Image (cartoon, rainbow, N blue to C red; front, side, top):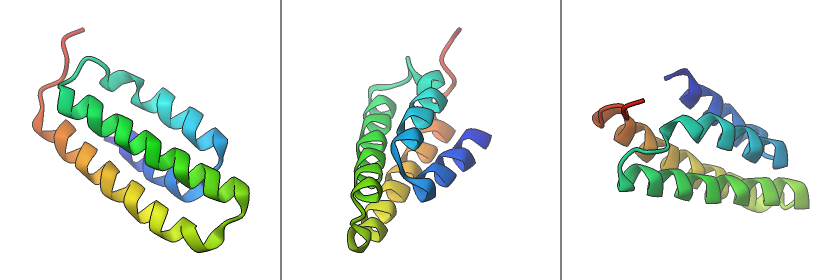
Amino acid sequence: MEFINRLEALIEAGGADAVVEARALLRHVEGRSCATVEAVDDFLVDLMTVAFLVEAGLEAFQHPARRLARARLSKLKRLLASAPAAAP
């Protein structure tokens, strides 16, 4: 899952462009289970938080927000690994 590596890099990058790129990368998981869709939404909210903190220059809060985003991405990765791919 190469796109997971790219999402991990986007967590570190932060910024508004990271959110746009993450949405594009996650577009292919549409149509999966409700749990997967929820995990995608949770991850995107956390990535938006990281982007906000980066843009606002609030460095003290960036590390915990990135840690949470990584945890959400880990959950998403587990869900994607255990679920069959959606039919085209």
